Length: 283
Length: 283
Image (cartoon, chains in turn cyan, purple):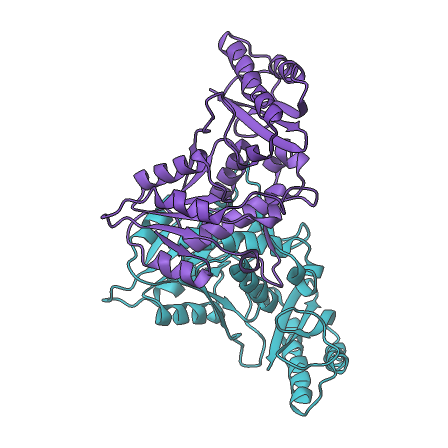
């Protein structure tokens, strides 16, 4: 495993790689979800680049940038445990700084329009502009053949998929299933913010999604009914403060009156100051 | 020479190229200026891709998109004359359509902020958003090692240089000198719009720039004085309608009170309905 920080070193490392490259962009504080992306990238490419960068431009003024959890030493040792010694396969970890990514005079932004208006985009103004901009930078700097993202951030996956198609990035997007704790809670670096009681209550996202999915599988196609049932389940949990619940078209993310094709059930819920999101895909 | 239109064919052609690739983005209706870019790209790279695409998103609602001159057959024969037969060097001409570049549902834009506010950006709202977006697409689709632009479009060159740095495009920008007619008029596909009298009057841009340059070389460093002398010369030509005249910092494009470092003299002038631009770099 090779760790690089500067663009110069990253480019030198990238140019030394012969064969296919998979990119796994992360904000660090790695959990099993991230590691599953790295494992898949290793299985599908000769080499893997993992970026670790807590991107300031995707955090709102009142969000948790300064207290976002960081533990580079632990991240590196987790990644080292995934190495394949004795093979030609390389694992490169890139840890740029905010000053490198956004030097003085920085002024270029990538924006995806319609897809970023609702859901997370409505609740977190500017968030996706920061995401698409930094991901475009990561793509250009690392020139991957495939890039790996988690389904957990469903809208992010849809937005980046759109950006890749619209801007003709010569790479394949791979969206990987959400990794969950034994009780169904989607893994997230932000779960560490939860108190013990909140952690227990937080399974209500998974339970709500399951209620709606069961209804869907029993034949329910009324979008408003699916949203209502998820809201009812969330309301039954005193520690949960719903922010939004959605039943939307999988590609356009527009709210559905009637589910006809592939659809996305999603929600954002506060537990105290901690904001969690989760989703299921109906197909 | 190989001509391709679809993304599929362009990608197949690009992946077949072994070695360095130079990209020359054009809107067609090629003149000697374009051909000098292609010649330089051929000299500096093993292979060259020339794109020909009249990009609708960089034209304003009242601009000349529909009547922008086009002559693909002539363009292809001019390019064919630059080929190096008997070598392994490839010349690929890419002619995408607007429907390919901006299919239904297209919604991603690349924007450079401060640098696009003044000069051409102030006169042509949305112009540079169209330029940076299409150039990002061309870069991603063709993955060049070097990309060639003319100094004639000075602000465009500055904006794209900024985009390349900010978004970490792994390529080198090469800005080539403006090619001029014998009487000094900068070559432009739009020169063909000029009447005979306008064509004659149009040398006033070159003459104004020369007046300011001579003053600068004689020691004048007052930005307002340089602008005034250019304006006076333009005002002396009855067919010329000045839109703006600028003496700005070369990198930031901010107007200068005093010229201390590298600077850009630039102007936009109407002759009837035809809008011409030109510039000199002071260093």
